[in-house]
Length: 429
Image 1: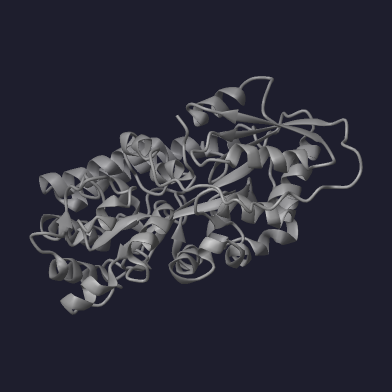
Image 2: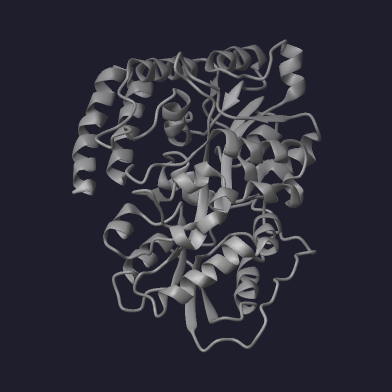
C-alpha cells in the first residue's frame, strides 16, 4: 500500500492507533505540479563509488520519479534508489542487521535510539556543519541525542486546528488561544446540525494524546531523562478538563476520521484538528473563510503547541563508503535547495525543513499555508527518542481510562510514571 507522508505523522505526531494510520492512505494526498524544477547537475563524470538509497513508498504521485531524478543528477557517485512498498520500518530494521545495509535511508524524525546505541548509523553533526542554523531548531531537536545530530531532515508535515471564521463570528466568539476558549467556542457554535470540535472518531484520544502533554506545558520525558516529564497536578487538571469537554462540545463521530478534511469541508463541524495535507481542499471549499491555529494552551502552565513529523536522511555505519554517503546526503538535503523545495511543494503539501525556503513553496507562500509553516517553527514538538512503544501503550491506556471510565488522572499517570522509570532505565542501560 502506498503511504503518504502524513502516514508517518499519524503515528508519531500523536498516539494514533495503527488502524487509523493505515486508513490515512486514501485521498487528499495531493498531486504533483506540472512545473517541477529539474535537479541541478554536478560537473564531471560519475564516480565509480556505488551507493544505495532507500525510501518508503509515498502515496503522492510523482515522488518516486523525483527522488530518482535527484539521485541521477549527482556526479560524485552512482546512487541507486530503492523504493520500498510494505512495512518500511520493519524492512529497515531487518536490513541494518545484515551485511547488505542501505548506504542512505530515510526514517521518521531520524533513526531510533536503538539504531544509534547499536552503532548502526553515523553521527551527521559535522556533515550538517554551519548549515545547522538553516534548519528549524525544533525539527533538529527530534533527531538529536547526546548533543549529536543523527539525520538531516528532508521535509516536514504537521497537524493544526482549522476553524470557520464566519461561524465563530456569528456565535460571537474569538479563535481560541486557550483551552477554556476552545471549550467556550465549541459550545457556542455547535447546533443540532453542526458539531463544535472534531478530532477523530475515537473522540480525539488517539491523535491528541501527546498534544495534552505539550499543551499543558510539559515534555514527554523529564529534563534529566530519568522518567516521564508530566507527573504534575497541572497535567491531571488538563486531562480532567478534556474529559469534561469530550462529554459536551466534542463531536464523537463523523463521516471520516481526523486525518481526512471531509468532516470540516462537509460542515459537520465548525472546528477540526487535522493535518496540513488537507489545506488545498479546505481552501477550495471555503476560500478565505477559515483559519488555522496551534492547539490551545491548557491550564496554568500551558502553551500553544503543534506536532510535526520530519522524514529524515540517515547514513548507515556499515555501508560501502560512509564518507561518500555523507557527502551525498549533504549535497541533496543541505545544498540542493531547488530539489528540497520541489520535494515539499510539488507532491502534496509539505513544509521545507529550512524555514527560509517556505516562501518558495507556492502552497505555503501566503495565507493559511504561511501561517502553518510558522506554527512549526514557533510551537512545534516531536516525540522524544526516549518515548518508546511501551510508554506509548501505557499512556494510551491511562488516557483512555481517564476519559472513558472516569478514572483518577493522578493514579493513571502514576502508573505511566512507573512504566517510564523502567523503560528509560532499560534504554539508557
